[in-house]
Length: 186
Ligand code: 5GP
Image 1 (cartoon, helix red, strand yellow):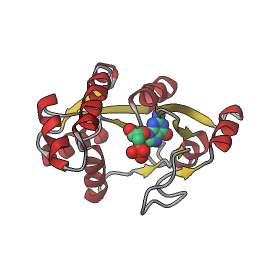
Image 2 (spheres, protein in one colour):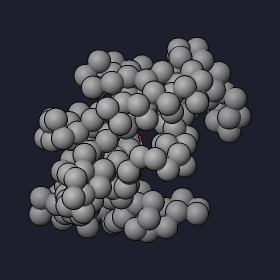
Image 3 (cartoon, protein in one colour):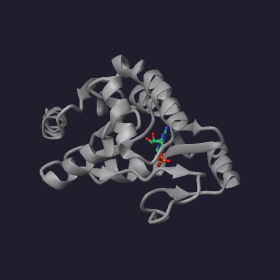
Image 4 (cartoon, helix red, strand yellow):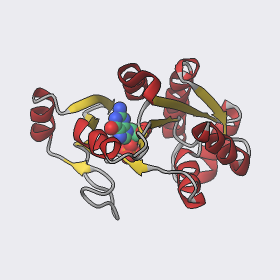
């Protein structure tokens, strides 16, 4: 069986990363299996343990850090930990499939450092920060303080973009999906 690769996606919030990943999955021509991360944040409505995340208590999360069960973990928001389990990556790669990670910028760069040429890191960019602001405001669910926080975090995240293998601008969804598909097939 062909050896699987790790495909890592990162993007600031509001860049359409999840939409791109779902569209790629819907194409059906790319082998991709999702690594289920662990987190200590509570499940949101509609999220299932073991499917969206492995939802752990903070004590359990810390115990697994101590046991060396994570390939990487980050405190993405204050008090909120997220980590990639070695068992998830091994299970998917050992079965010959590509393993998709949707993780934050620091986690992404750590996984790339560990797996080198076996990993492909892709950063999704907004066309501009002004456009990102318009998209976040367009959701209409967040107040302006929250939007400013997301935008300043976005700038911090975009500063890491040059360290990724590839950068894809999500200006037009279909073109961005086609571009990512071509990178993976390469
Ligand atoms: P959410 O709480 O909205 O599901 O995810 C928040 C952030 O955590 C997203 O940026 C997501 O990419 C990141 N994230 C999810 N899983 C992991 C992980 O295993 N490791 C790291 N470093 N970040 C993760």
